[in-house]
Image 1 (cartoon, rainbow, N blue to C red):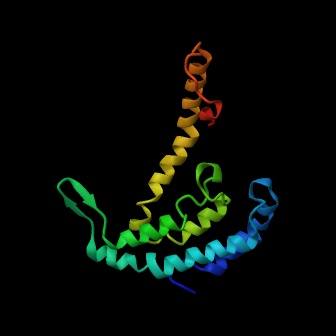
Image 2: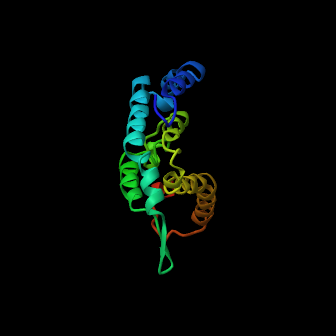
Image 3: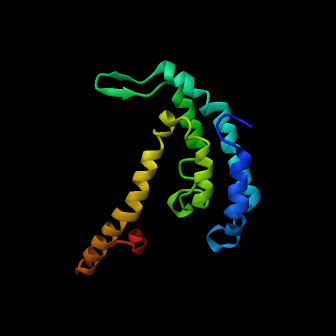
Length: 167
């Protein structure tokens, strides 16, 4: 048992109530296994307990500062962010085609449940992820439609490879 969340409860919800093992039989996640899900969640727990949870105290002590019109996060958040980014936690639920790991969203959200207890830190990487999701869902289709309209014009003098327009 730890102070962040009850991992037995999380495992029960994921395995017994949501039956996440069934996800591995779906084409989108056939490369995954329940063991991979468990491994990711255990690593999220380790990072959270060893690095991100302790940064709650140091982040409060250090605080943010404003200097010459720029806001600076607590220095202790730098290590947290580097490990969070390098561990692939930011793009865990993003498709591999878009540079992510392709985990099912329910597993990605369960992993991030370990990090949200330090909301001051968690708020740094996650709004960017939300903006990227919005961009992919709402902006790219508009760009694709505009590009397709542009392509339908007689622009034979411009050589644009078809794969450049993949959305």
